[in-house]
Image (cartoon, rainbow, N blue to C red):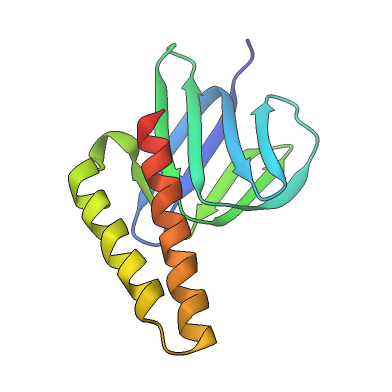
Length: 133
Protein backbone atom coordinates (compact mmCIF):
# COMPACT_ATOMS: atom_id res chain seq x y z
CA UNK A 1 0.00 0.00 0.00
CA UNK A 2 1.31 3.50 -0.84
CA UNK A 3 2.14 5.95 1.94
CA UNK A 4 1.27 9.62 2.33
CA UNK A 5 2.03 12.35 4.93
CA UNK A 6 -0.35 12.86 7.85
CA UNK A 7 -0.40 15.32 10.75
CA UNK A 8 -2.78 15.51 13.70
CA UNK A 9 -2.54 18.80 15.58
CA UNK A 10 -4.44 20.06 18.63
CA UNK A 11 -4.05 23.45 20.34
CA UNK A 12 -1.92 21.76 23.02
CA UNK A 13 0.52 19.83 20.83
CA UNK A 14 1.39 17.91 17.70
CA UNK A 15 -0.02 14.42 18.32
CA UNK A 16 1.14 12.65 15.19
CA UNK A 17 3.27 13.38 12.16
CA UNK A 18 4.56 10.85 9.68
CA UNK A 19 3.96 8.63 6.69
CA UNK A 20 0.83 6.46 6.91
CA UNK A 21 -1.03 3.95 4.75
CA UNK A 22 -4.54 5.07 5.74
CA UNK A 23 -6.45 7.16 8.28
CA UNK A 24 -10.08 6.68 9.31
CA UNK A 25 -11.59 10.09 10.04
CA UNK A 26 -14.86 10.79 11.95
CA UNK A 27 -16.27 13.35 9.52
CA UNK A 28 -19.43 15.22 10.47
CA UNK A 29 -21.22 13.55 7.53
CA UNK A 30 -19.88 10.09 8.44
CA UNK A 31 -16.60 8.23 8.71
CA UNK A 32 -14.22 8.30 5.78
CA UNK A 33 -10.99 6.47 5.06
CA UNK A 34 -8.23 8.56 3.54
CA UNK A 35 -5.52 6.83 1.49
CA UNK A 36 -2.81 8.08 -0.86
CA UNK A 37 -4.17 10.13 -3.79
CA UNK A 38 -7.56 10.67 -2.12
CA UNK A 39 -9.60 13.40 -3.79
CA UNK A 40 -9.06 16.80 -2.11
CA UNK A 41 -11.69 17.77 0.43
CA UNK A 42 -12.22 19.60 3.69
CA UNK A 43 -14.68 18.47 6.34
CA UNK A 44 -15.60 19.24 9.89
CA UNK A 45 -15.13 16.50 12.47
CA UNK A 46 -17.57 15.11 14.98
CA UNK A 47 -16.32 13.73 18.28
CA UNK A 48 -14.93 10.29 17.58
CA UNK A 49 -11.92 8.09 16.95
CA UNK A 50 -9.21 8.73 14.37
CA UNK A 51 -7.57 5.42 13.45
CA UNK A 52 -4.06 5.81 12.03
CA UNK A 53 -2.62 2.85 10.11
CA UNK A 54 1.11 3.43 9.92
CA UNK A 55 3.47 2.08 7.25
CA UNK A 56 5.09 -0.10 9.93
CA UNK A 57 1.84 -2.05 10.36
CA UNK A 58 1.18 -0.39 13.71
CA UNK A 59 -2.25 1.14 14.34
CA UNK A 60 -3.04 4.07 16.66
CA UNK A 61 -6.42 5.26 17.90
CA UNK A 62 -6.89 8.86 19.04
CA UNK A 63 -10.07 10.46 20.31
CA UNK A 64 -10.82 13.88 18.78
CA UNK A 65 -13.43 16.31 19.99
CA UNK A 66 -14.30 18.19 16.83
CA UNK A 67 -12.12 20.13 14.42
CA UNK A 68 -11.34 20.00 10.71
CA UNK A 69 -9.74 17.53 8.29
CA UNK A 70 -8.03 18.79 5.14
CA UNK A 71 -7.18 16.29 2.42
CA UNK A 72 -4.84 17.82 -0.16
CA UNK A 73 -2.46 16.51 -2.81
CA UNK A 74 0.30 16.97 -0.21
CA UNK A 75 -1.41 14.72 2.38
CA UNK A 76 -3.90 14.85 5.27
CA UNK A 77 -3.94 17.36 8.10
CA UNK A 78 -6.36 17.18 11.04
CA UNK A 79 -6.75 20.25 13.23
CA UNK A 80 -8.57 18.94 16.30
CA UNK A 81 -10.27 21.03 18.99
CA UNK A 82 -8.77 18.54 21.43
CA UNK A 83 -7.34 15.06 21.12
CA UNK A 84 -5.97 12.29 23.32
CA UNK A 85 -4.66 8.80 22.60
CA UNK A 86 -7.37 6.29 23.51
CA UNK A 87 -4.99 4.30 25.75
CA UNK A 88 -4.55 7.38 27.98
CA UNK A 89 -8.25 7.58 28.81
CA UNK A 90 -9.45 6.48 32.26
CA UNK A 91 -12.83 4.71 32.15
CA UNK A 92 -13.67 5.25 35.86
CA UNK A 93 -12.87 8.96 35.69
CA UNK A 94 -14.91 9.27 32.50
CA UNK A 95 -17.91 7.55 34.13
CA UNK A 96 -17.76 10.10 36.98
CA UNK A 97 -17.63 12.96 34.46
CA UNK A 98 -20.67 11.52 32.65
CA UNK A 99 -22.60 11.35 35.93
CA UNK A 100 -21.71 15.00 36.67
CA UNK A 101 -22.75 16.03 33.15
CA UNK A 102 -26.09 14.23 33.55
CA UNK A 103 -26.65 16.17 36.78
CA UNK A 104 -25.77 19.41 34.97
CA UNK A 105 -28.41 18.68 32.30
CA UNK A 106 -31.02 18.00 34.99
CA UNK A 107 -30.06 21.11 37.00
CA UNK A 108 -29.85 23.54 34.05
CA UNK A 109 -32.13 26.52 34.59
CA UNK A 110 -32.05 27.98 31.06
CA UNK A 111 -32.44 26.54 27.58
CA UNK A 112 -28.90 27.65 26.68
CA UNK A 113 -27.48 26.07 29.83
CA UNK A 114 -29.33 22.84 29.07
CA UNK A 115 -28.10 22.87 25.47
CA UNK A 116 -24.47 23.33 26.55
CA UNK A 117 -24.75 20.67 29.26
CA UNK A 118 -26.36 18.24 26.81
CA UNK A 119 -23.61 18.88 24.25
CA UNK A 120 -20.94 18.13 26.86
CA UNK A 121 -22.81 14.99 27.97
CA UNK A 122 -23.08 13.76 24.37
CA UNK A 123 -19.34 14.27 23.81
CA UNK A 124 -18.49 12.37 27.00
CA UNK A 125 -20.81 9.52 26.04
CA UNK A 126 -19.25 9.39 22.57
CA UNK A 127 -15.85 9.15 24.22
CA UNK A 128 -17.07 6.41 26.56
CA UNK A 129 -18.43 4.48 23.60
CA UNK A 130 -15.05 4.77 21.88
CA UNK A 131 -13.38 3.14 24.87
CA UNK A 132 -15.69 0.14 24.56
CA UNK A 133 -14.56 -0.58 20.98
